[in-house]
Length: 128
Image (cartoon, rainbow, N blue to C red):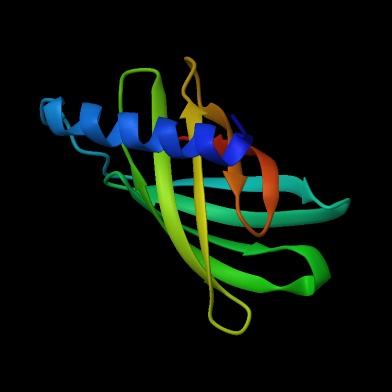
């Protein structure tokens, strides 16, 4: 089983669990920004993102300077938040992504993810 199929399975499981999830008691009123740094094919990739009401957007640059934007859907749980997304990069190349963000006590959070163009990445974000 390769990494892409594992990410696909995790995304499918997260989607099914989110359908069974009760609505959140309180809404996220302040956006949560993050930065991401990753690698694919020995090239560095980086980006910035923001999450608001379980939806997010991420602007990133990958190998050979290809730049694009991703629309993300988060599935929020008390300590973790898996996500899946689709993006548009370069000359209309569709990208997919998935990962999970972890929310320990405090004002920071971190995550790991995979992006079909930008590769494996780590994330560091801030809660206000």
